[in-house]
Image (tube, rainbow over all chains, first blue to last red; front, side):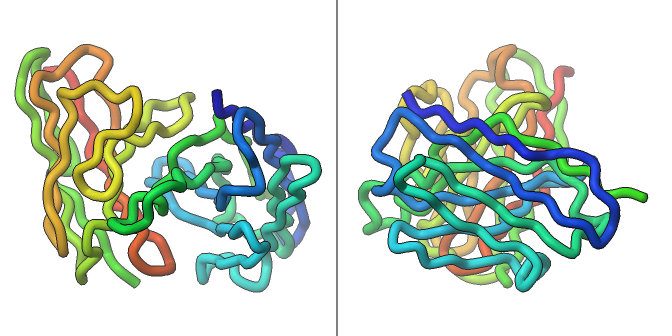
Length: 124
Length: 107
């Protein structure tokens, strides 16, 4: 069974940094793309970043240049290094695993499994 | 960026009702359209991927249709555990975008 567990959230001042981690188990980690999605208080879901199996990365414009996603296939973890944090980065951050499999109709690009989330609060 | 608009934003329904949620994209997403169920304090749950494919373990009362810019999620007979917020999501182009959500409440 797929299990994703986020850690590293907390309270940080504007301009500060925080590193989120996601420990994965129950699947062959290196074979799947991984991503982070967040939900600000009272708001909907917002995709943040993704890391591909070859280590390639892609980011939302709102975090480009401030956040860095990486993966460690030897430890089955994906991380999100967040710097120059803003009040508007306050959110519950979810780690998610791509569904994978057949890509002919785009199905592989859905998020098949999610963690419970870790809360990041940016406030002075 | 592709804008995803869901309607309605919320609805009230009774157990056993048939419920349909719509999602419209500002430009084509082909069939790269997914639906998730969200309950506070729980991990989001994939229901439908590639517009119409039922994810493993999801009850058959959930179904999805559409392609291009117009999509629907239907719950054929609403159950107590289905009261939640539902999001559509396009994975056709970066940046990925989600609809604003549709909250399904008990009437």
